[in-house]
Image (cartoon, rainbow, N blue to C red; front, side, top):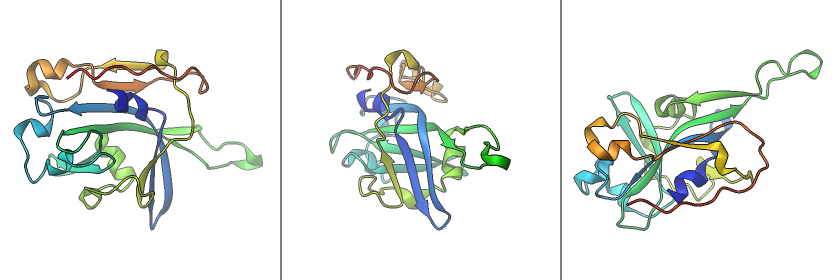
Length: 191
């Protein structure tokens, strides 16, 4: 769960023909190891899940319900399948109104993995993309320190079929507060 919690406050950045788009990650969901019944990798190594068994820092993008893409970051060593689903981001609004005043709220919430992928134009084309290259799609650490008190852990969503694994508190959400606070403490991975 170290990486899942540490992704909160980082920025997802997308560069394409529309320009540069960035959003602050505020919700993630972890899928860790071959025994995690909620993970795609629990069914073994397949053409779809092969990317989860690869090196960390790679994008795992898949399609659900035949229409929604989901974007994950592969996080563990090679041959140990683990990925973090990015569930929600805040996109900074840069529009300015009359007299330099903000024309709307300071940020827009993009909530839900399908909406997030549509907003960032993430599709199966980005599956297996190396997120460490800083090209097309990447993550940025802009130095934000997150207090543990601002992070809420909850059960994962939409994995009721996984039995007890569905109840794991492996979904993390960042709630508003001061941006410069004490750095969060890491927690051990519950395998």
